[in-house]
Amino acid sequence: MSKEIKSRAFALDPTFNYLPEQDRYLLALGNPSLKFNVIGVGVNGQEHILVTYLEGRAAIHGIYDPNPSSVAAARQLHQKWSRGQELVIYDTLEAACNDPAVDGLIICTPNYTHLEVVKVAAQSGKHILLEKPIATTVSDALAIMELAEAYTAVFQIGLQYRYKPTYSEAIYEVLTRQSVGSVKTIAIAEHRIPFLDKVNQWNKFAKYSGDTLVEKCCHYFDLLNLFAQSRPATVYASGSMAVNFTDFEYNGEKSDILDNAFVVVNYANGVRASFNLCMFAPLFYEELIVCGDDGRLKAYEQVDFLPQSSSKTSLEIMCGDHKPSRRSTPNYPAVIEQSGHHGATYYEHINFINNIQGQPTQTATAREGFWSIIVAAAAQESIKQGQVVVIDDFLAQHAISL
Image 1 (cartoon, rainbow, N blue to C red):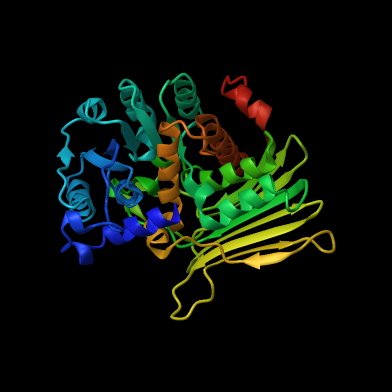
Image 2 (cartoon, helix red, strand yellow):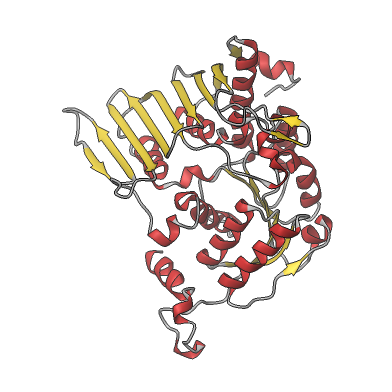
């Protein structure tokens, strides 16, 4: 795999465009075996276009987005990385989903559109990669989960933080090697700058995004659920809109999304977890701490705006006198990390294609996507009510029996 990654990155470098095809050996591009359409080509959709070409086993056949500026940007990106391949621009969602030339659909539309888009996409029977969050409401998340579990093709949820280098290593150490023993507590923190701009500014309004704990933090609740290896039992949260967008209005509506929160989750197996969010910090910082009966794992990722920075990632496992302790700096090759989400989307695509080819993976299922929303939505409800939310009661309120 490492040779293929290196060769692919170099092969796409315009510096080597002078080479005739017959003179390409290490830089041979090969012929992609799959074709994908991207539905929604804002910043996330464009990231998927880029990593598709970096990964190499698939090509982007076409795109659909009602926003002309997004289409223009995606077309320019495609031209740069596809080495002149034609790009189909569809006039309708139905046409993009049902083109018989296409094997898979990558859905990157605004959160609140997911259910309606998925209903159309699923009629095609094609493989589907649906960006996170699976949906903005519990009812929509349930509907998509039920549809996905009855779906005969691949239906993957884009909870790609599982593939960030720090989290990928942590998952392996905690769940496979059991380096810290039996997990007892989990803590995740994210401190970062505010949400950036989107078309129609939909991410500034809870009714469109699902609010911050759904839109942004479903990644982290997925990780909490994964490390806990159990069903959440209770959720308690405190949060507010303290700094960001307090004076922001769009089309006469005032922004209403959280910019900070503390969330505590108790799991049925006794594991306790917490999440700490600050969306007005002058950097990007994520931290994970997992404590077990045999040791502690701490991992972090930091990108700041200083001219000289220390290592961007770190992972340490401390086991006292039980077994060896160690420190490392998990990273992917720079060209991969720079493709987006610290390289996680690239590896998500590797696993999407592996799923299509019938190889075993650990990608997020629709059910796991659903449970990440249950924790997020319960936390949002807890903030509104100022009370602990019992998950069984929360599900019953939504007429859900699982």
